[in-house]
Image (tube, rainbow, N blue to C red; front, side, top):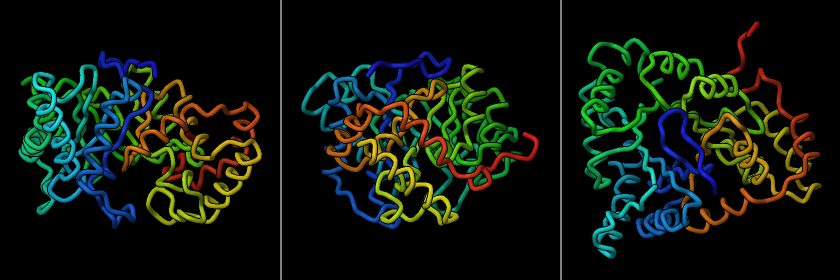
Length: 328
């Protein structure tokens, strides 16, 4: 895949980014377990993709005791052992992680932000992070997040100290993401489940960010699985129960895609990939086979007529995760 500039960061990223939450093995969330070896093999499949995917997204809080980061770190350590001098992370590969609250106390202070990064670097075996996100800041108030010496101030300090090259904010609520971008501290925004075939909550945020030179990462284009597995298999959208109209729309979209001989998952993925204001699309994977399948889905030809039909089936905006405010 060709690369795109991630906003004004100067980082060149592929249109696909691999999300590593599933590699942490969280059966309560995903319904299946992932062994350490499977996770290591998956990371290697990405690193050996010959530039098809050069961006990996993880987090301090993925899994018990940072298991996703530990497994990525193990993959990198094995590569360093097998290929001395290469450093484990291939040239041009970007590894982004996120700072998270203390998993036991919920502390999300400036001190905790620094500790979170230290934990991540130790697990990953890295002494520098290209892109570091403030993760799910909806867990604290905006005033707490931006207080003197708080999370945002500390992130800016970490960048000034050279431990981090670029800062992003990754979370859910669109209005809150916009507030954090308005601080001028963040160069990248990531949100999830809010720009899909079924939900356009984040479109305005993404367009505005792109125009301002802020990098845009769109995560979970399958809506937590509904647009990949189908509404009968995955009855939840964005990991929660939604109005029945969401599942009805997904079923109608799948029928339209089937008539066009296109997998619905391909249309869901490419809906994000074709947006000119999205720099990279984050897809969670759990096996090397899923990496290969994702690359195949990205290349499926989709006729213009199907895009037109799918657009007519989008649920009413009142059903989106973040419905637009009246008058906006």
